[in-house]
Length: 109
Image (cartoon, rainbow, N blue to C red; front, top):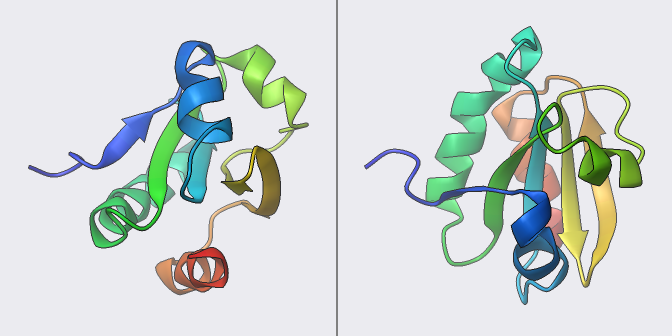
C-alpha cells in the first residue's frame, strides 16, 4: 500500500517520533493550499518506501500544527528538515527534485 511508511507528525507524537527517534527523521513541513508542497508529496512518499527501516519519513501540516513549525522557524513551505538526536541538522526550503532529496538523506543515513 502506497504511503504505508509515511508518518503524520503532530504536537502529540513530535517528542517521541521525531525528537526521540533512534534513526534520522525527515519531516516535510507542508500545507494543503501549497502548490509546491503537493508537487513534492509523491517524491516524499516514494522516499518513505525506499528508506523504510533506515530513515523515518513523515509530514507535518503547518496549518494544523503551527506551534511545532514555529518552534523551528519554518517560514516558507515546503521545508524538508532532517532531525537527528532531537535537533534539526539539515533542511531544504522550496520544491526540489528527488535527486536533491536523496543527496540530503544519504548524507544523514
